[in-house]
Image (cartoon, rainbow, N blue to C red; front, side, top):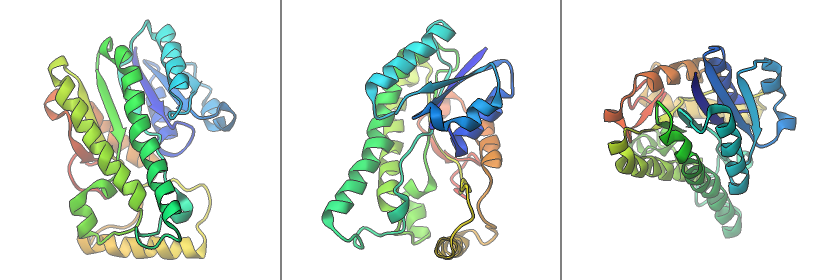
Length: 264
């Protein structure tokens, strides 16, 4: 049995990781969610190889309890950790760094993004490391984004999504730091962009559609053939192909769902 732990597993990309991985009865998948009450889609899978565990990644006590629960099932090991949980402030995601209504609000968004997307990821990795050291794959995947790439930001002329992008650029360095430390032990640390994925659960408003249209226009300046977002199903299928072929020689990489630096 191969074991996987996926954070932020209640919906979107996280749910789809659980869905595709658990379709193989040879896998044991631990779906980590902030609240079991909202994890109805996971429960609806009805698969005996899926364990739904409640833990907010910003709560280290909850993470320790989650690791202990996994250890009882696997005999104190874990093969793969997929850090998918992340924070983005949806109401202000379109703002630039100089367009916030107050310094306090900008500070809040920066610190909230850093706390979840960087600090909590570090704590999650540290708490699960003892299990991963006993695992076969010794692989940690942190879901990042092309928005955290400096060259892409300049190419796309993208000044928005600043707190999120800044925190993701920081977690790419976190990935590299762990890779530098644990390569001699055969660990693989990978920062992986899922592409531009449509994880919406409702039709967009007129204003949201306007923003998406503008964003796609900017992307087409770099990728003329870009047609729009992909589905979580397609994204996860492509990401798993990358994860399955990555080796320790590639540890520390920051790449896309295509296995390269093509973010869309």
